Image (cartoon, rainbow, N blue to C red; front, side, top):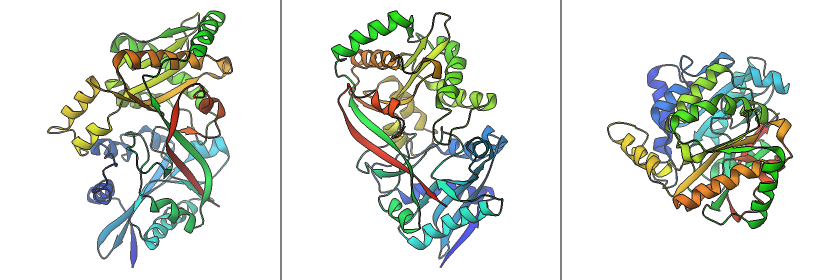
Length: 371
């Protein structure tokens, strides 16, 4: 028999955070998150998303042992923007037992229903910076530190419990050192001259700071029509600035600016930290940070985090400028492999930019929905 318990105490939240470490301990592909990041994400005093979100964290127990977990979230801001009063579920993990997965999903849905919600969808987090989707293709591949990951039985459980597809995100794998197509080079030169766009690759971390406000302004503008997105407020911007840009590599960032030096497009890339996170086993200390620092300095694999063009500059082809610039950097630094971030399959503008590059499918994750 499965029992559900809401995690409220520090001990229970520790069980919630640590359960995947037990579930995936024998899985060579799983990349453990940093434990202190998980604590901050689920802490209303630390995570500014709780200004417009509320959440509950549920554990499933069987014979006294934790066998599953799920977070239930109500993002009031997103529900208002999208006019869709649904509960979100996220950070779901469970053993291969349909009774367990159903009990978790029911608990999340009933919690939301009691607060006036109708229907449920996920996996989704508080914001787009959290892991989204459930892996349905690419189980043989190693995920990025920001990618969703789960065992192959998980999506089968979702379908069994009456959930259907809402939307998919796709990730692609590239040979990062492949030559820039001649056609792309010619077109980029014309685009740059016609629209007077500058391609900026920062030379230092100090220079990065100059473009961060423009990046987040552009992110809010260019992502606002994407599935479930909500505009980041200043507290969130400060939070993610510290979380991401503190260890960013200047040579892997690219900003496109207009004649007034305003950011009109961006490409944010990071060295792959997946192998380093595995060695760290979720902990920065005593030695985990050493593995991460080494991976930031010497790398041959990169993860493409964020890219976008503000709406008034879209459909001009300028996105090709930052991809070509990043391609040049990858070639110069001997980078072998690049993995794209999850892009909505319905976002044809984003997915279509890879048409001129050699690529192969890597991951496909799905947001499930139930009315």
